[in-house]
Structures are given as C-alpha cells and as structure tokens.
Image 1: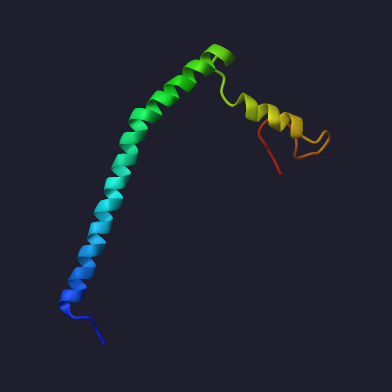
Image 2: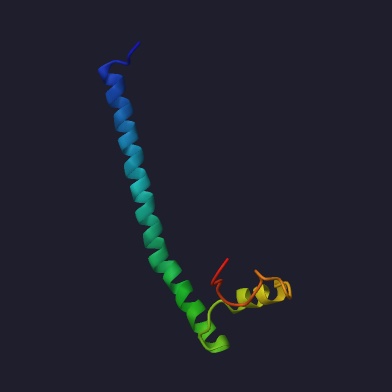
Length: 83
C-alpha cells in the first residue's frame, strides 16, 4: 500500500527540516570554531613560538624516534623513498 499524498508531503517536509537543522548546526559549529577555536589556536601558536621557536610536532617526532627499531629497514628516519 502506497502512502497518500499528505503523508508523502509530511515526510518530505520533515526531511527538509532535518536538512535545515543540519545546515544550521554546521554554521553554528563554524561560528564556534571562528571565535573560541581561533582564540585557542592563537594561544597555542604564541606558546609554541615562545617555548619551541615555532617548531611544530616536536612531541610526535620524539615519540617516533624513541619507538624506531634500530636496524629495521622500514624504521629509518625521514620519508620513505622506496619499498
């Protein structure tokens, strides 16, 4: 049994309302990132500049160095140039 026109229209309007709500949520998230997140990023950049001379990802680089297996052919420092 097929739904009648009123049911189809109601379901369509509900789907459309959900799309608008999703879009509004995305805009709100963007606004949030541009305000609070921008301030947090600025703070992080200032701290990084003062403490590490602006260098990024130092902790990750140290962890990779510590976990590298000496002599393992795939655990060389730097980018992989060949298989």
